[in-house]
Length: 84
Image 1: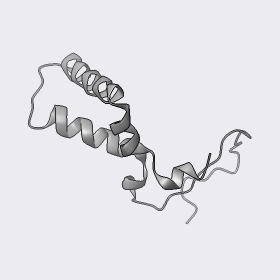
Image 2 (image 1 turned 45 degrees about the vertical axis):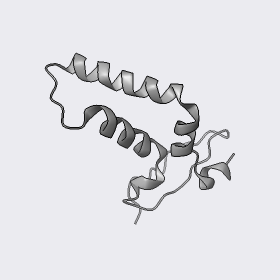
Image 3 (image 1 turned 180 degrees about the horizontal axis):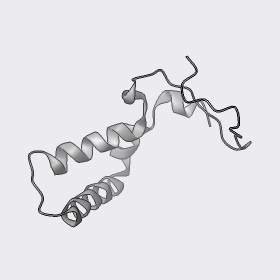
Image 4 (image 1 turned 60 degrees about the horizontal axis):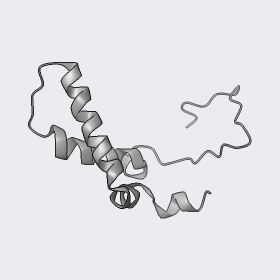
């Protein structure tokens, strides 16, 4: 089905689109990052403000950045390596 397809979309030469099956968030690397942050920093918590949410989110993302091997293992999928 031609959902979300624009006839006027111009794709730059340095961009390569990878079409993914519908309803397959497991193929999107950022979903794994969010799952890790959500489980480790947001599980069963209540926040008093959006600023508190942002602080914890930044803390979680910075923690992942410090453990680059773990982040790589969560996001560097074989099907993405073939596109480079």
